[in-house]
Amino acid sequence: MLNSETTTATHTEASDASPIKSRSGTLNEGSGGREREYSPENGKKKHTKLSLFQATALNTLNMFGTGPFITIPFVIAAANPPGPHALFGYGLACFVCFLDSLVWAELGSMWPLNGGTYVYLLQVFGHNTWGTLMSWLFVWQFLISGPMEAASGFIAMSQYLSYITGITTYLHHSLFAVLFGVLALFALYRNISDVGKFTVILWALTIAAILFTLVVGYGDFNHEYLRMPSNVTEKTGPLLWSMGLCARFGVYDFTGYFDVNYVGSEVANPKANIPKAGVMTCCYVCLIYILVNIAVLGYLPWDPAQGGFVLLVQEELDSSNYIMAIFAEKLWGRGFAIFFVIIVLVTIYASCFALMLGYAMIPAAAAKNKFFYAWFAHESKPGLYDRSLLFIGALTLICCFIPLDVVIEALLTTRLLIQFIAQSVGLWVYRRTHPDVERPFKVPCYQLVCTLHIICFSFIFITTENWIVSSGLPLLEAAIFYLLLGVVAFLVFTKRKGMWPFPEPEKSDLTCEKN
Image (cartoon, rainbow, N blue to C red; front, side, top):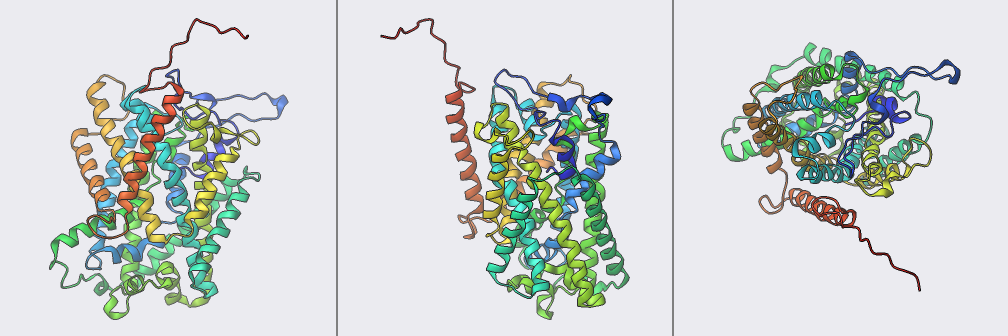
């Protein structure tokens, strides 16, 4: 994920910086890869790069935008049967995300360029070969998963708002989510020079909210609420299978520790700082989120048989969507809860704003490098890719009409395969085929790490809700179909361009004369 401070740093000066594969077979580092000096006459300052502290803070900004403030009830209710043991699935997400941070660290240390996954897939699978297809599919799936991720925040905002308005209809949630999305889209056309500073302030507010949750939760902790139900081991199969869904919510919460990889050219000493920032961010955010989940579990009853918050999810009541408002109200009443809700709304909005700004740059950068549809590369003014932004914005608004839990599950499905699993497989392949390449950071015991990484993410992937096995929503089938559609689109595009896997047509020496 990209966030607003990251994009602000590169939006006006490095719009061409994304190292997308061009037809010539080279990577465009562009202006984003160089330290720039400006003369005093033109009034511009020296372009400074991100320090390790700034890069680490950058990764956490988007991670703290939503997280457990919206997923706690869904995590506990996702277990079969529901209960605190859902945290084992959440812990699985912590473990696999830590392994994933190691993979990102090695790839980022080798190619500290702008572009992240797009660059890595090109490099590890090869130019003008399968890397070309994998990179295309990464951009292709982002056209859907990116808007879904932004929409999940807007939907959560509208549901938290219902605590204040008292209106809990589907129309209320959808229209307010759309309104928040429109406001963000409108704001992206405005001057965004102060977005970075504004986001840091919001990040500080979110940290304060998390600290408040930890202090209150552990200050009045009830150990009985952590007792698992007596029938937890009666059906082992469904229990283990449900851990995949719990882990999926965890992956949704944790993703963001690799944000700085997308703007590697903007990081000072990137071969050292990118790995450090990613791994450190993943470790401490995972720890904080586990502590927040336990704090809420120890403060609010969850048991549906006793009217706990899992019942709210099972009965699809809106109050399950603003769990932290209930948390705050129990402490100091409704007035304080409304204040707390406002803080949550502002921080989620900042996160969604950042997502839309960053994600609009991905198809635009690919298009500008002539590797994606040229339509996305249009600029209404320097650095503002209006068509790409409007496309991402329009899909975000459409996704605001989908239930929150469905959006969260669906957005991760294609990414699990094309981003997380593909990078791990690619790292393994590249280690075998290029053993002598310089690696400033090396994944320790990479065979073991990649094996566990692929197994865990594959488990989370196959436990996606599906129609064939579980008779549920066909999310898994839809994701696979969409990726296959992406392969077809890739073949049509590359056929027209004369790119791999099709040879470029030979130019004829003959000329035709006009009659």
